[in-house]
Length: 261
Image (cartoon, rainbow, N blue to C red; front, top):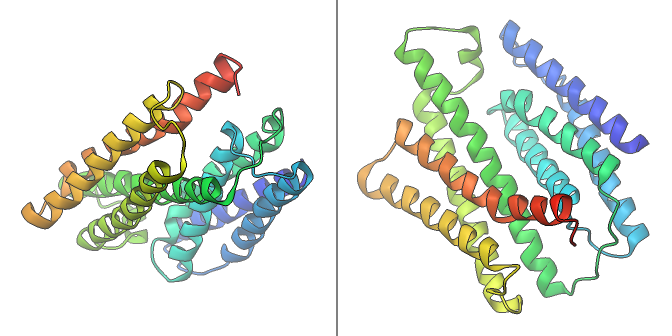
Protein backbone atom coordinates (compact mmCIF):
# COMPACT_ATOMS: atom_id res chain seq x y z
CA UNK A 1 0.00 0.00 0.00
CA UNK A 2 2.94 2.34 0.69
CA UNK A 3 4.22 1.97 -2.89
CA UNK A 4 0.77 2.74 -4.27
CA UNK A 5 0.32 5.77 -2.04
CA UNK A 6 3.70 7.28 -3.00
CA UNK A 7 3.09 6.47 -6.68
CA UNK A 8 -0.31 8.17 -6.48
CA UNK A 9 1.24 11.24 -4.89
CA UNK A 10 3.95 11.38 -7.58
CA UNK A 11 1.37 11.01 -10.36
CA UNK A 12 -0.68 13.86 -8.95
CA UNK A 13 2.39 16.08 -8.57
CA UNK A 14 3.31 15.41 -12.21
CA UNK A 15 -0.27 16.18 -13.32
CA UNK A 16 -0.28 19.36 -11.22
CA UNK A 17 2.99 20.57 -12.73
CA UNK A 18 1.66 19.89 -16.21
CA UNK A 19 -1.60 21.71 -15.46
CA UNK A 20 0.36 24.70 -14.18
CA UNK A 21 2.50 24.58 -17.32
CA UNK A 22 -0.61 24.57 -19.51
CA UNK A 23 -2.04 27.56 -17.61
CA UNK A 24 1.22 29.50 -17.93
CA UNK A 25 2.07 28.33 -21.46
CA UNK A 26 5.27 26.88 -19.99
CA UNK A 27 6.73 23.87 -21.82
CA UNK A 28 9.27 22.95 -19.15
CA UNK A 29 9.96 19.38 -18.05
CA UNK A 30 9.79 19.67 -14.29
CA UNK A 31 6.91 17.15 -14.43
CA UNK A 32 9.17 14.44 -15.84
CA UNK A 33 10.90 13.56 -12.54
CA UNK A 34 7.73 12.83 -10.53
CA UNK A 35 6.21 11.10 -13.57
CA UNK A 36 9.18 8.72 -13.87
CA UNK A 37 9.14 8.13 -10.12
CA UNK A 38 5.42 7.32 -10.25
CA UNK A 39 5.88 4.90 -13.15
CA UNK A 40 8.76 3.15 -11.42
CA UNK A 41 6.82 2.76 -8.17
CA UNK A 42 3.70 1.64 -10.03
CA UNK A 43 5.70 -1.03 -11.86
CA UNK A 44 7.37 -2.09 -8.60
CA UNK A 45 3.94 -2.50 -7.01
CA UNK A 46 3.03 -5.13 -9.59
CA UNK A 47 6.45 -6.77 -9.65
CA UNK A 48 6.52 -7.31 -5.89
CA UNK A 49 2.97 -8.68 -5.72
CA UNK A 50 3.51 -10.97 -8.69
CA UNK A 51 6.75 -12.24 -7.20
CA UNK A 52 5.02 -12.97 -3.89
CA UNK A 53 2.14 -14.75 -5.68
CA UNK A 54 4.43 -16.61 -8.07
CA UNK A 55 2.23 -15.80 -11.08
CA UNK A 56 1.01 -12.98 -13.31
CA UNK A 57 -2.18 -11.48 -11.86
CA UNK A 58 -4.79 -10.57 -14.47
CA UNK A 59 -7.84 -10.11 -12.28
CA UNK A 60 -9.98 -7.01 -12.72
CA UNK A 61 -8.10 -4.42 -10.63
CA UNK A 62 -4.68 -5.75 -11.55
CA UNK A 63 -5.40 -5.65 -15.30
CA UNK A 64 -6.93 -2.18 -14.94
CA UNK A 65 -3.82 -1.01 -13.10
CA UNK A 66 -1.48 -2.45 -15.75
CA UNK A 67 -3.40 -0.64 -18.48
CA UNK A 68 -3.14 2.59 -16.46
CA UNK A 69 0.59 2.02 -16.10
CA UNK A 70 0.91 1.47 -19.86
CA UNK A 71 -1.02 4.66 -20.58
CA UNK A 72 1.25 6.53 -18.17
CA UNK A 73 4.35 5.19 -19.91
CA UNK A 74 3.06 6.17 -23.36
CA UNK A 75 2.09 9.62 -22.11
CA UNK A 76 5.56 10.13 -20.65
CA UNK A 77 7.17 9.02 -23.91
CA UNK A 78 4.96 11.44 -25.88
CA UNK A 79 5.73 14.26 -23.45
CA UNK A 80 9.47 13.62 -23.25
CA UNK A 81 9.69 13.77 -27.03
CA UNK A 82 8.14 17.23 -26.89
CA UNK A 83 4.65 16.27 -28.05
CA UNK A 84 1.42 16.12 -26.10
CA UNK A 85 2.86 16.31 -22.58
CA UNK A 86 -0.46 17.88 -21.59
CA UNK A 87 -2.03 14.43 -21.99
CA UNK A 88 -0.64 13.76 -18.54
CA UNK A 89 -3.15 16.16 -16.98
CA UNK A 90 -5.78 13.52 -17.79
CA UNK A 91 -3.81 10.28 -17.90
CA UNK A 92 -1.69 10.59 -14.73
CA UNK A 93 -4.70 10.97 -12.38
CA UNK A 94 -6.29 7.93 -14.08
CA UNK A 95 -3.10 5.94 -13.50
CA UNK A 96 -3.03 7.11 -9.87
CA UNK A 97 -6.62 6.00 -9.26
CA UNK A 98 -6.18 2.52 -10.75
CA UNK A 99 -2.89 1.97 -8.89
CA UNK A 100 -4.56 2.87 -5.62
CA UNK A 101 -7.56 0.68 -6.44
CA UNK A 102 -5.26 -2.27 -7.18
CA UNK A 103 -3.39 -1.82 -3.91
CA UNK A 104 -6.65 -1.53 -1.98
CA UNK A 105 -8.83 -4.19 -3.62
CA UNK A 106 -6.71 -6.15 -6.08
CA UNK A 107 -5.25 -8.91 -3.94
CA UNK A 108 -8.38 -10.84 -3.06
CA UNK A 109 -7.77 -13.69 -5.53
CA UNK A 110 -4.71 -15.87 -5.97
CA UNK A 111 -3.58 -15.76 -9.62
CA UNK A 112 -3.25 -19.00 -11.58
CA UNK A 113 0.07 -19.69 -13.36
CA UNK A 114 -0.01 -19.10 -17.14
CA UNK A 115 2.31 -20.63 -19.71
CA UNK A 116 4.27 -18.39 -22.07
CA UNK A 117 1.65 -18.59 -24.82
CA UNK A 118 -1.16 -17.31 -22.65
CA UNK A 119 1.17 -14.69 -21.16
CA UNK A 120 1.98 -13.50 -24.70
CA UNK A 121 -1.74 -13.26 -25.45
CA UNK A 122 -2.35 -11.36 -22.20
CA UNK A 123 0.47 -8.87 -22.74
CA UNK A 124 -0.66 -8.17 -26.31
CA UNK A 125 -4.15 -7.48 -24.97
CA UNK A 126 -2.94 -5.17 -22.18
CA UNK A 127 -0.68 -3.23 -24.54
CA UNK A 128 -3.55 -2.89 -27.01
CA UNK A 129 -5.83 -1.56 -24.26
CA UNK A 130 -3.20 0.95 -23.13
CA UNK A 131 -2.44 2.21 -26.65
CA UNK A 132 -6.08 2.46 -27.70
CA UNK A 133 -6.89 4.06 -24.34
CA UNK A 134 -4.44 6.84 -25.22
CA UNK A 135 -6.12 7.08 -28.64
CA UNK A 136 -9.49 7.56 -26.92
CA UNK A 137 -8.08 10.37 -24.76
CA UNK A 138 -6.58 12.03 -27.85
CA UNK A 139 -9.96 11.69 -29.59
CA UNK A 140 -11.69 13.54 -26.75
CA UNK A 141 -9.04 16.28 -26.85
CA UNK A 142 -9.43 16.50 -30.63
CA UNK A 143 -13.18 16.94 -30.21
CA UNK A 144 -12.66 19.64 -27.56
CA UNK A 145 -10.10 21.47 -29.69
CA UNK A 146 -12.25 21.34 -32.81
CA UNK A 147 -15.33 22.51 -30.89
CA UNK A 148 -13.45 25.44 -29.33
CA UNK A 149 -12.05 26.55 -32.69
CA UNK A 150 -15.42 26.25 -34.39
CA UNK A 151 -16.95 28.49 -31.72
CA UNK A 152 -13.95 30.84 -31.90
CA UNK A 153 -13.25 30.24 -28.20
CA UNK A 154 -9.47 30.61 -28.13
CA UNK A 155 -8.72 29.23 -24.69
CA UNK A 156 -5.20 29.22 -23.32
CA UNK A 157 -5.15 25.43 -23.08
CA UNK A 158 -5.32 25.20 -26.87
CA UNK A 159 -1.67 26.26 -27.03
CA UNK A 160 -0.69 23.12 -25.09
CA UNK A 161 -1.69 20.89 -28.00
CA UNK A 162 -0.38 20.54 -31.55
CA UNK A 163 -2.35 22.05 -34.45
CA UNK A 164 -5.60 20.28 -35.28
CA UNK A 165 -4.24 18.42 -38.31
CA UNK A 166 -1.19 17.23 -36.39
CA UNK A 167 -3.31 16.07 -33.46
CA UNK A 168 -5.55 14.22 -35.89
CA UNK A 169 -2.54 12.57 -37.50
CA UNK A 170 -1.26 11.53 -34.06
CA UNK A 171 -4.68 10.01 -33.29
CA UNK A 172 -4.62 7.80 -36.38
CA UNK A 173 -1.01 6.74 -35.87
CA UNK A 174 -1.85 5.73 -32.31
CA UNK A 175 -4.93 3.83 -33.50
CA UNK A 176 -2.82 2.05 -36.14
CA UNK A 177 -0.36 0.83 -33.50
CA UNK A 178 -3.20 -0.21 -31.18
CA UNK A 179 -4.97 -1.96 -34.05
CA UNK A 180 -1.81 -3.96 -34.75
CA UNK A 181 -1.61 -4.99 -31.09
CA UNK A 182 -5.32 -5.86 -31.04
CA UNK A 183 -4.81 -7.99 -34.16
CA UNK A 184 -1.96 -9.80 -32.40
CA UNK A 185 -4.25 -10.31 -29.39
CA UNK A 186 -6.93 -11.95 -31.50
CA UNK A 187 -4.43 -14.10 -33.40
CA UNK A 188 -2.74 -15.35 -30.23
CA UNK A 189 -6.19 -15.99 -28.78
CA UNK A 190 -7.14 -18.16 -31.76
CA UNK A 191 -3.80 -20.01 -31.60
CA UNK A 192 -3.30 -20.42 -27.86
CA UNK A 193 -6.61 -20.08 -25.99
CA UNK A 194 -8.57 -23.29 -25.72
CA UNK A 195 -12.34 -23.12 -26.22
CA UNK A 196 -12.22 -19.48 -27.32
CA UNK A 197 -15.98 -19.57 -27.86
CA UNK A 198 -16.78 -21.28 -24.58
CA UNK A 199 -19.64 -19.78 -22.60
CA UNK A 200 -17.42 -17.65 -20.33
CA UNK A 201 -15.34 -16.32 -23.26
CA UNK A 202 -17.79 -15.91 -26.13
CA UNK A 203 -18.92 -12.40 -25.17
CA UNK A 204 -15.30 -11.26 -24.77
CA UNK A 205 -14.41 -12.71 -28.16
CA UNK A 206 -17.42 -11.24 -29.97
CA UNK A 207 -17.00 -7.76 -28.48
CA UNK A 208 -13.25 -7.79 -29.18
CA UNK A 209 -13.86 -8.76 -32.81
CA UNK A 210 -16.50 -6.02 -33.14
CA UNK A 211 -14.05 -3.47 -31.73
CA UNK A 212 -11.37 -4.72 -34.13
CA UNK A 213 -13.77 -4.32 -37.06
CA UNK A 214 -14.69 -0.76 -36.05
CA UNK A 215 -11.05 0.29 -35.59
CA UNK A 216 -10.14 -1.41 -38.87
CA UNK A 217 -13.04 0.27 -40.66
CA UNK A 218 -11.97 3.64 -39.25
CA UNK A 219 -8.41 3.20 -40.52
CA UNK A 220 -9.73 2.07 -43.92
CA UNK A 221 -12.08 5.06 -44.05
CA UNK A 222 -9.19 7.37 -43.24
CA UNK A 223 -7.06 5.84 -46.00
CA UNK A 224 -9.71 5.61 -48.70
CA UNK A 225 -12.06 8.50 -47.91
CA UNK A 226 -10.04 10.80 -45.69
CA UNK A 227 -12.28 10.44 -42.64
CA UNK A 228 -11.51 12.99 -39.96
CA UNK A 229 -13.02 15.27 -37.35
CA UNK A 230 -16.18 14.28 -35.52
CA UNK A 231 -16.56 11.05 -37.48
CA UNK A 232 -13.10 9.88 -36.40
CA UNK A 233 -13.80 10.86 -32.80
CA UNK A 234 -17.17 9.12 -32.74
CA UNK A 235 -15.95 5.82 -34.16
CA UNK A 236 -12.84 5.81 -31.98
CA UNK A 237 -14.95 6.13 -28.84
CA UNK A 238 -17.48 3.51 -30.02
CA UNK A 239 -14.68 1.03 -30.71
CA UNK A 240 -13.07 1.77 -27.34
CA UNK A 241 -16.34 1.24 -25.47
CA UNK A 242 -16.73 -2.16 -27.17
CA UNK A 243 -13.18 -3.06 -26.20
CA UNK A 244 -13.70 -2.02 -22.59
CA UNK A 245 -16.87 -4.08 -22.39
CA UNK A 246 -15.07 -7.07 -23.90
CA UNK A 247 -12.78 -7.59 -20.92
CA UNK A 248 -13.35 -5.12 -18.12
CA UNK A 249 -17.13 -5.13 -18.42
CA UNK A 250 -17.33 -8.91 -18.26
CA UNK A 251 -14.67 -9.17 -15.55
CA UNK A 252 -16.50 -6.58 -13.45
CA UNK A 253 -19.69 -8.64 -13.60
CA UNK A 254 -17.92 -11.97 -12.98
CA UNK A 255 -15.60 -10.86 -10.18
CA UNK A 256 -17.38 -8.04 -8.41
CA UNK A 257 -21.05 -8.81 -9.01
CA UNK A 258 -21.23 -12.60 -9.30
CA UNK A 259 -18.09 -13.19 -7.17
CA UNK A 260 -16.65 -15.70 -9.63
CA UNK A 261 -12.98 -16.00 -10.63
